[in-house]
Amino acid sequence: MSDFVKIKQLFNITEDEGFSWAEITHGNIHQSLPKVLINYYRQLGKNKAINHTQDNLLAPNELRLSDNQDYLVFYVENQGVCVWGIAIKQLQEANPTVYMSYDEQSWRPEADCLSDFLYAMAYLQAVFALPYNLEDFVSISKEEAQTIKQTFTQLGFAFTQWIGIEFYCHSDNDVIMVQKNVADNQLVYDLLYAANNKDDFLALYNTLSQLGSW
Image 1 (cartoon, helix red, strand yellow):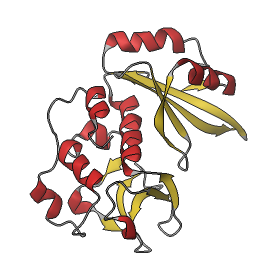
Image 2: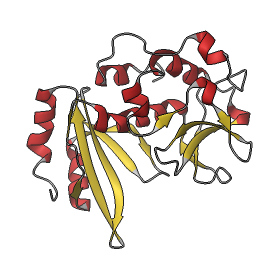
Image 3: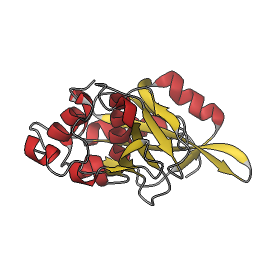
């Protein structure tokens, strides 16, 4: 997945929109970075829609050590509530585990590999950034969330520590996001979906508009 073909198709990207090798190495606090992160920076690192619509990828010269000095922070939640990083001892791995932290002291695994995390972030940004999107969350029941799981293709990446988000699709041109939420001390689910073209969005809408409370 380190070629990021599916992300490029979802965002209609036909040419690299990334940092040069000189930009990646100049000012970077570490001499070595995981191969997957370098590839991502080179191919997609400067695309604002993918990397800055909701949460924020740090540029190579913005990478920093966590407060406890054990992780390289490379992604930040939009309000600074949490950050994501790679363990310093794993930086030489091609596709290392990604960890999440609320205080930069205690860290928990978010994704088994970096490529899965970057895909999850890109698809999260997509539900807000693509030209055809729902614009607002729809609250759905547990049973309706299960219906989505049975009807659409579940993608092989998710956010398990932060909030709890799963991704689905009908085609390579769309994304469906189901997010866990707590309202009145009860677990509920929020739905968002988007597509890069009108026809695929309407195909989603024709099925998903029957779900939830609007």
